Amino acid sequence: MAFPHVIVFLRAPELGKVKTRLAATVGPAVALTIYERLLALTFAALRQVPEVTLRVTPDTAIPAVTRWRQPGWNLAPQGEGDLGTRLARAVADSGVSAARPVVVIGCDCPQLAVTDLVEAAWELEEKDVVLGPATDGGYWLIGLRRPAPELFRGISWGTDRVLTESLAAAATAGFSVGRLRELRDVDTEADWQAWLASVR
Image 1 (cartoon, rainbow, N blue to C red):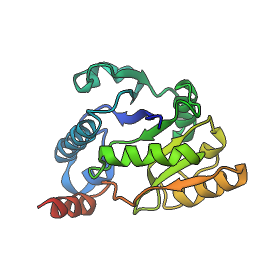
Image 2: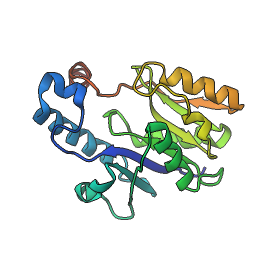
Image 3: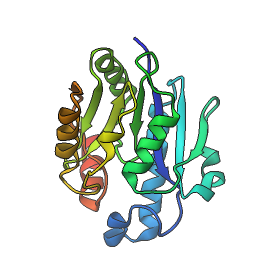
């Protein structure tokens, strides 16, 4: 089993720039604190992963996330374009192949565990694509063993149609798809409270 190269998409932790839906009810300062906790939880889950690249936005904010970098990790800007363009670029830049699969995650899913990445690696032994469905209709992980820019075009990012449209794009391209467990992203105060309740 080839363990995937993990790419983490993240926004620099800046007041008023992160978790805006959450900030609408808890305020920007609390939202920033929660976001930094989500970052810490994500990075803790990746501690044993052999190859990690942090793709940062805005591009000028790489110094702001250097403190999160662990030995052997790489830092790179996300670059210009919508989310789909940036995802396709990150996957292409990774040198993805069957021998070197890639997994892309965000920092919104506090339930993420290294075992999820192991499961994704096993799925990618036989499948072209693996998706981790989110309860909001998106996905918390996408894994690939080949460049697949068609999976990132024409997707209604930020809506509850992301997973459905991504599965349809994979089917149109003739890709086989594996699925992981469904998890909940933290985008709202209700999401955060639900996670807190689950770990009490």
